[in-house]
Every structure is written in structure tokens, then in C-alpha cells.
Image (cartoon, rainbow, N blue to C red):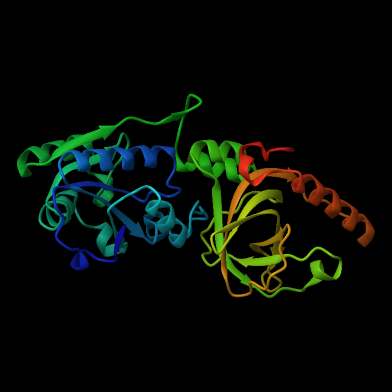
Length: 320
């Protein structure tokens, strides 16, 4: 997959099959659209192209919004690469760009720059200033400029229409099973391992402290979770503790601290990026009377996860 950070850097694309959108989560519905793009592109000896945006349009248009995103930009590019896309064009979203009319967007990008043969959109997709562009508008432009427009119906998982909003709600509820069903893959968190207080090491449970680089990245609800940890393309079982901290200066909630205990692993991985795939929820966060009570609970957690097999992760939901 080739990543282009501007239209100017885009190479000549043959028989382009195009879609556009934020694609937060790269969920089941997104994967269906991309799969169809790849199939149609192959049929016409062409290439699949996704036009997406960074920062997320909602964050630019409504800076005060507290809505967080399922995937960071780094995570999204990795998830898109796994779909088999040929090209991703990342447009810097600004207030000025948001004022572009649907006509100008289609003419300048879809027609003049990419020379699209087919354009695929989701059933509720809107684009351009004030989201005035829709399927009917695009269909008429397609007839004028000579590209085919295909609309995709809502994708259902267990009879529930999939959307990024519903995935966010599942994560905020701590319902990893439901979020993963909607996503069509495990929810992931990727970050750099940084130095911490080393308290875990002192009590016999060494943890890696994973720094979340983007403030807009959504983490699941407070709790203890079972994860698959990928370090340099090798997988390990892990236990993640997510809790909230307070900003001492403002008194407001500032972030969530993510700590992961990696089973059967003792290497030094400071400053390395690791990827955590969330498989199930183990338990709620608890208050402990003393250190011994904490150690006993951590031992029980580790014993439970140690029995699980990396080759059978769909059964890792022992307490979810």
C-alpha cells in the first residue's frame, strides 16, 4: 500500500476505484467497502484508492468536542494496509478545506487528479461544505464526468447496523466482545514503552508503561483486560490495567494510564513500539487493603491468563 500525504505527491493511477471518508476504526463496514473496491479494481485491471483526512474533520470543525477516535493515525494506516488497498491519500483537513463545495471536491480530486472510473460510498456518506454532497448528487456528477457510482448498504453484525459511534459506545462500556464484533477484528492500542515508577517490578509483576501519543485516542472503560501483545512480530499473552488519573493543576481528568504485564517476557523494550490487541475483559479495577492483597489478586489474574493459548484467542473471554 502506498501512502500519499498530498494530492500533489500522487502518482498516475490506472483505472482508479475510489472511496473517501474518515474510516475511523476500519470496522466491518469499512472492510466490506474496501474489499469491494479491491475486487472491482482487479476486474478492470485498476487500482483501489482511499481518500481520508487528518486531523479528523469533527476535531477541526468542533475543537471543543470531547469525542475520541477508535484508532490513532499510526494505527489506522496499519489497519488499512492489512486490507490490501493499493493507495491511501491523506488530506490535511482544515477550515479552508471544509469550505470546498462538493462540486469542487469531485472535480479537483476525483476527476482531474485521480481520473476515477468508479466511486464507492457508504449508504449515509456526505461530503463537501455543509455535507451537501450525497449519493444522488454524486450520481449526477458521475453521469456528467463519466464515472460509475456505487452505494453500499449499512453492514449488519448480529442484526445491528455497524457504525464507529456504536463501536465507541461499546469501548466506553468496557464491552470488548461487542466492539470486536463490530470491528471485525480485535481493538488495538499501539504505543511506545516508557519508564514508570517500577512499582510492579518491586512486587514481582513487571509492567510495560505504554504511552498513548494522540490525545484523541479512545481507550476502553477502566478495568483489567486480556490482550495479545505483539513485540517485533512475536506474540505474547498480556494483562492490561487501565485507570484514570487526575491533572493535579486543574483538578480535571487528563488521561488514562495503560500498564501491561507481559507473560513469559523479561526483555528490555524501553522506547520500542508495541501493539496490544484487546481480546476480553478480565475484571473491574479494585481497591486493595494492603500490598499482599494486591499481589494475591495479580497472581490469580496471571494464573487465569497463563492457561489460555495464543492459537485459540477467540476463547480468551474467560470473564467477559
